Length: 327
Ligand SMILES: [Zn+2]
Ligand SMILES: [Zn+2]
Image: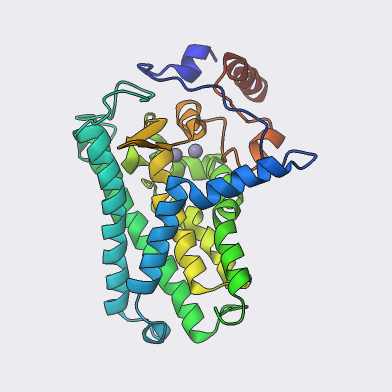
């Protein structure tokens, strides 16, 4: 296996971010207070977190049927949730796509691969990367998002979850769990994603997400239905740990809207005077497959030796590891 075979499948290199630091993480030992505060700030106040949590709160309080109505499965309220999810995904992902790839408001500034997204290409449904990505995201993605959401609310409505909590009983706990959800999801994402790289699952499901060698905002949630089922299963945690239905709403919001940013194809998305900073980490996963299965917030890629920081050294290390693995 050569470097060319692994790394340069027709990429036209644009922006190359700084090497990703392996330290400064929540699991560094000994624990470091400033690092913890830095991550807490990111989970509370990064533009992405504010968008996800804001949308989750608006959705739960204003765009979700009453629990009493959801005690019995019925197509009317399930269809409402599906249409609302389609609208939310289209609003966020469509806006990011429109600004970066149609209006091209920042041109190729901070864009990783200058080739952009594939058009008139036989690898994709409708011969279009964006149309295929939209199809899988809106049909399968929003469908399975809705299914998990509907079943979870139905469980809450009927008292089937193990430990339902209410605002009056546990406001502090509700807030703490809400803040922790993106981090809990990061652990789930590593293992769910790693599972889909197991060859039978890769060949039957995850290959579809990886058709996107280069990614755009719609690529993030473009997955095979089997992968949507596995990827969104993180919400099941709220069936067994003390939770409010709003937690399930936020959990699913971070999982569905969240991939938009790191798949945008840009390291920084400029919005007027401010900037949304995304993770180079997952772009490297799409480019090289065999590295960076999780995200830098959790230690698993460091522990299992699959952390690629974007440097030449890390690249050589990955090639050596693959040669050892595959002979
Ligand atoms: Zn991806
Ligand atoms: Zn993957």
